Length: 292
Ligand SMILES: NC(=O)c1ccc[n+]([C@@H]2O[C@H](COP(=O)([O-])OP(=O)(O)OC[C@H]3O[C@@H](n4cnc5c(N)ncnc54)[C@H](OP(=O)(O)O)[C@@H]3O)[C@@H](O)[C@H]2O)c1
Image (cartoon, rainbow, N blue to C red; front, side, top):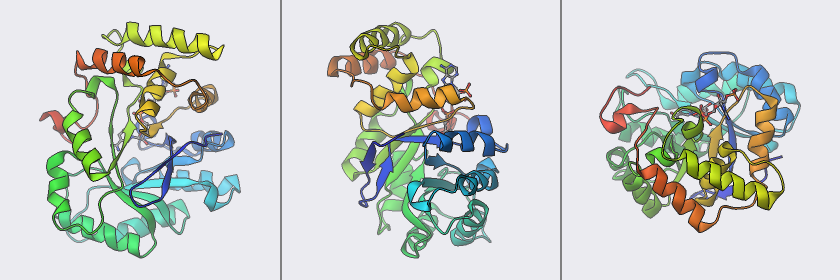
């Protein structure tokens, strides 16, 4: 069972480990996988309107019979057209999720909306005030995107959910510094990318060596994926991951109780990640491609 939480700038707590219904489940029914996560007591669930599977997330939550208060549920606003309101779109999500409120509502991307970001954010503040979401935040925001909303904002976003792993450590440094100054929590997706998407890089020997040291200290086998989770934990960054396999859910959950990385290990991973740049999602951050 996951128990570590991190406190947001609005006082609410976010569980450190979250289970996502995107990427592998994008556009697909995620009920079975979500049920499996819930059975393992992984109750921080990350959905999005764009994933087109909020009904299946809602079905898994309802089937569990667990009280609403045991869950932490996120959803995200997809591209908004001129004629829609944020409230309408959130209410539609809540109906699909069969919930009265979500814990966290995010602007999924800062680009490709037909309404200005500052007007969208104002509506986020309103739905939070109304109690339709506990916290409000953003995703895939760069400094210029924050600048577009913060001038007129009454509420500072609680979270920016971004691709975060050692191979974007260098490229993301300026936005991470900006967020730290404003007390906006980064949450990581794509955190396992160095072991599943960019194998054979400068990080591999460091991850193997750190996994060996932590395995010895813990008296059990520790995977390179768990080392990446521990790297994020050392930085107090929530991990949003996913899987279709029960063994992997157990592996993700087990990471929470493993010994912490040393400061030297964290620095060695930062350093090895800095040598190469690999971004898998939101290519517009590097001035390439669109949102997806
Ligand atoms: N805000 C955004 O724009 C955004 C973008 C992307 C993702 N997300 C969120 O973040 C969640 C996680 O996304 P992610 O895919 O980026 O997470 P990830 O943690 O980088 O990768 C998880 C994937 O890696 C596989 N995996 C895990 N360990 C592995 C290993 N040792 N060897 C091979 N494969 C392994 C899992 O597949 P198995 O089924 O084989 O275990 C799973 O499909 C999404 O579901 C979504 O909720 C948000």
